[in-house]
Image (cartoon, rainbow over all chains, first blue to last red; front, side, top):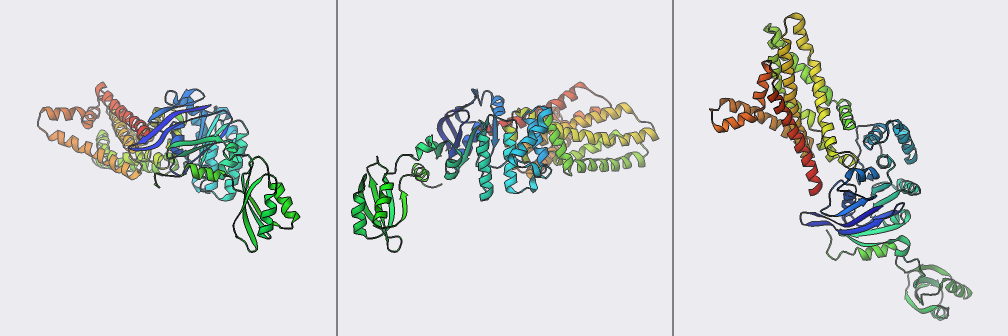
Length: 315
Length: 235
C-alpha cells in the first residue's frame, strides 16, 4: 500500500530524515516510534505531500507523491501533530468544509459527517465553536477530519499527546476500532506502551534514520525467559541448593536484599525449558514463599533505549 | 476552488472584518460625496472614486492580512495542502473571496451615484468606466496584499508590509509625475498603476489598461503560489 524508498530530507546542513525505506501493507497498523525530534513528523509530512523530500520517493497505492500528488492526497487522511482546526467555525461547519475539499459527493456529505461524528464521539458538540472545545474534543475533531472521505490510509501524528489518561485510552480504542475496518494506519508516538497496544508492527526511527522495523511480538522476543529474578523469603543456603536442582536451571546467584528477610536471586536457565513452574513447586514445598518473580528479558522499552542510545549527544 | 472561496467569504462575515471593511467604505465615500458632490452641487462622481483610491492604503491590508498568514500560523495550511486540491485553487479561492468582499462594497456605494441620478444629471458612462477602473485597480492592490500575507506568519507583519507597499506605489506615482523626461522616468511610467486609472476617470475603457491591471494581479497571484510551493522544498 505504501512504499517509501531512500527518503531523505535536509534542512540546510541538518539531516532531518536520512535514507529511510520501508513498506506498509494494506490493512496494517504500524507504529512510528522515536524520540522527540527523531524525524517522525518530517517523514509523515513528506508522505502526505505537505513538504517535499530532498531525495527518495513515496508511493501510495502505486502513485508517486511528487508526480501524482492529488491521487495520493485522495487516499490519505492526515492528523498532524497540531490538529488543523479553524477555531472560529462550528464543528459541523468545519467538518462540512473538510468534506467539501476532500471531494465527498454533495448528497452524501451530511450523512457521512454525522456517521463519523458518531464513531469518534463528537455528535454532541457539533454546534459548538471549535475554539471553545476542550483539548480532548479538539483532538477528536481533528481525527474526524482525517476520517472524512474514508481514505484507505490514515496517518496520525502523536494522536494522544497532551491528553489526560482517560482521553488517551478512548483515543487508542478508537484507533483500534478504526483499524478493524481494514484501513491502513500509521501512528507515530514516543510512548512505547501506546505503540505496543495499538500496532501490529513498529518502525523505530532515531536521528532521522530507521534503526529497526519488526513485528511487535518478534521485537520483544516472545520466546522463553532466559534470566529470571526471584525474591524469596527463606534461608539462603537451602534456597540456593534446592533451586539448583530444578530441571533447566544453569545457575543461581544472590544479587541482594531489597526487602526485609528476603533475598533476590538471579536464575539463569538453559533457554529451552520454562523453569517457572519448577521454581514455584520447589520453593512452595520447602515453605519459602515467593514475593516476586520477574523475567529480565528485554522489554520493548529496553530495546528502544538500546537502539536509540544517542552516541552523538543530546540535542 | 469554490469551497475555499465560500469558506473565506463566510469567514469575512463571521468576523467583523467584512462589515468593518464595507462600513469604512460607505462612511468615507459618504464624506467625499458630501464634500465634492452635495456641497459643491457637482454631478461629477468620479472625483469621489479618485479620492477613494487613497483608501486602498488602509483598507486592503485589513482585507488581505489574514488570508494566508493565519493559515500558516494556526497550521491549518496542513489541512489545505494535504487535501486533494491544487495549490492554485487554494490561492485563487482566497483571492476571489477578497475580491468578492470588495465587489460587494462597490455595489453598496452605488447608492451615491444613484442619488446624483435622482437629483441631477449623472454621466453614466463616466461613472461606469470609473467603477471598472476602480475595481481593477483594487484587484491589483488585493493581489499584492495576498502575496504579502503568504510570506509571513504574522497578520500584523502582513498588514504593515501591504500598507507600506501600497503607500510606496502612491509615492512612486507622485514622484513620476514630477520627473523630467528620461529613459528612467519612462520605465517607471510604464509600470505606474495610477496613470492607468486616469483613462477610466475620463470615461475611457481601454483594452491596454485592462490587460495591464489583470496581468499585474495575475503576476502577484502567481508569485504567491510560487512562494508557497517553494516553501514545501525548503521547510
